[in-house]
Length: 275
Image (cartoon, rainbow, N blue to C red):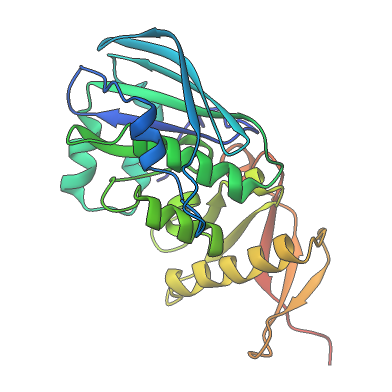
């Protein structure tokens, strides 16, 4: 990806479900309960769906379960092209999958309203609600905040969603986007960290460097900042445990319009300490 006008991100977790057919699914509360995690005491999950409007062309309502309240809005029209270009088309999936998602005919937007201050629980709640709207026509899950999208596959099952509470699914909830500066070098930047109140991270990848290793580095730094509640600023250094490698954080000084995230972006580079 070289040039783009970023579609605005939000501070509130949200997902967009995209469908092959122009007819929207019409789930009920039993469908939603079937998507929720049931604890070992076998108590049935409680769930409510309250509709202001619901038919095969348009829906508007709220969902409540497990102390969460989420908003639902759907229409029998595709998402704006700029949204698809920024999410589906830069996602890491195969061309055939992305081409199918690009041809969607309808969408449903799910927005987290209130309930839990924990972003992991907020995202898990969104996926639980998405599960209730899944079906044969569902082509993908679009996350504008993270500049990414993914096919439904088995990512929307109650069992998978329970696992997300134990281990963040980085390949689903965050985007890793390339912005080329010349034929060989490019910026690799995270997208979506701001939902977790963590700055996004950027790294200038040079010829011969492995982008997968940089992504693993991003994940390690995210865990450090998020789980330790660390506030990092430009000039701070960090040693990666077990590797002896030191990094330095710095400010973004170019391509600000695409590299800067809503919670800021820190550039990572390898640090050579003075001898």
